[in-house]
Image (tube, rainbow, N blue to C red; front, side, top):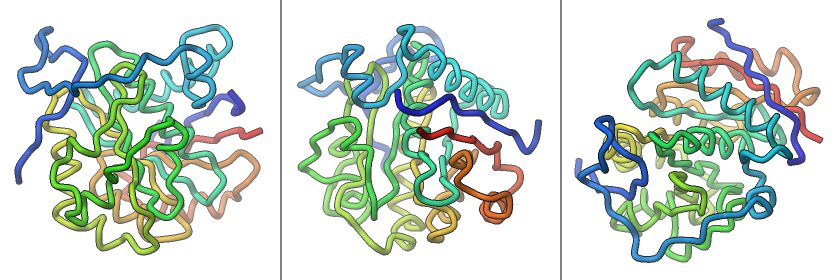
Length: 259
């Protein structure tokens, strides 16, 4: 891992497609709406996890894994027993928010009773498909929103980490605000959350101070986590970014120490 532990500073101290699921439901049995892809990726070993900058249980990443478990626990405490959608938004570019979003989703997937879907919403600078080594020739989020992909399952990919899925961004777009406020985008998020009661959705957002996309995406989220690169942003920038979101949704600020 090339990033130091993250620290959360809390400010508060249509048609639903069935999706694949590895975890048991709340009653302990397999969910009745599971659809498993015919081809499964090989489970990632420790080296592959580190190449993807994903937390794992071995000693070499214990500190990072514990930090993200703690972040997951804090968010679960805010929302209770129901699953939820978390928006992870960097204050400015270069804060390492995609790293935080990816590993927060992995932390949810560590729990064998939960699954997680990471959605790459940075259509101008998508990063998650490359980081997770996912080949998505059929497109991704933007292609689904625009109707070029008919079924959500076509853009919902296994990652090789049990119970962790990715919806890649897909085709690069410069203007996305109208797409993120569309009915099809809301249906996608609702489908992911409601298809399984144990699925937690993490939205990887563009920078807050560079575009209105993060604010628009926050309407689809239950919680917002701001990411500030340690030593890379000012207090004024953090406060300005935070003012874009409802205080009821803003869970806190992660200070990410990037080497």
